[in-house]
Image (cartoon, rainbow, N blue to C red; front, side):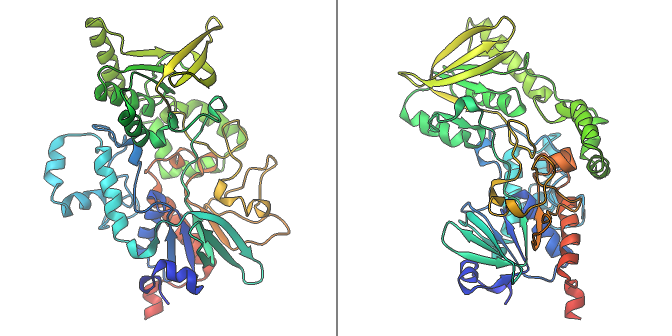
Length: 447
């Protein structure tokens, strides 16, 4: 029975065994779905997605924001420029190609790229079971199958898994236990702000972080609520310009993946120190300039709508009579200050990588049931193969298992949430997966 002819939930009920199940159907596994189709994967497949439909960064679709990424670095072009699933063809088929070209934008609008992602996902709707949040992954040593259980109570069986669960938001310890309706990560931004604005006028909001996302949020707050006081708290001196040198951008080239993967741990730390500002704790020139001019214009009018607390560290976050108070430390003179009566605190604090640092995780949470069987390094961090495969530790056995994304610590900056290498990573996973499963290309199989 083919995945093309069976209802996804019925497949779970009937105990169908799929050749591959992909967990998550965001850009990484959408790129994989394209590769499986175009490279003629002959096996059955199914994708499980926890949300009700395809989506990409829905809480950060801010007016005027762009993707900071060349549009040809999309879901498929670097692997197959002739594909029907390119961003250019999306524009063409939606009768917007010339209008888009006439905009003269260096990067596409984020809202349009989100539409592109949904458009591509729509072609694979028959391969996806939505509203299926995975709660556990078990293996049967006798049958060498995975059993994936979802929150809906369904079970799905597979000979192999490709995991693309998305990155885990970083919530600093100071905010542990804070009510999520007022203290929330940027991945909840638009929804939470809409809820709060319905409850009453927003007067005072803090944004934590010094990243591109932090400055985009400040600009959105400033334009949306003209009377709002906005306080930015960051460890850096101020918003730093992102390193967009064409030489630094080589970190998003395919050759860099091999260079980085086969480097020693010390060499990787050295590379990271030099390349940190290509992707982290920095912002693009256009948004920095927009905020700086806006703050100057406010001062001309005798206002102080945006305050930047640079070189400050957050000590604690506590509820007060109105909302929350942030207790911060000025690292220049070690003085403390209480920022009180905050209606909301937005955490532009990034995402967890794999590692042993305070903000890292040793393995993605979706792998909790398999963690004891996975091969790890001396620090207990899972080992990832060059082909993005995870292997079993000595004495254990696991069917084919892949991590599609989240591999920045092993494969470099192309795995740091960028679209740049999605399609090439999907090709690498396809090639390895096809060999592991021993499948013939579909064209040969039907001959």
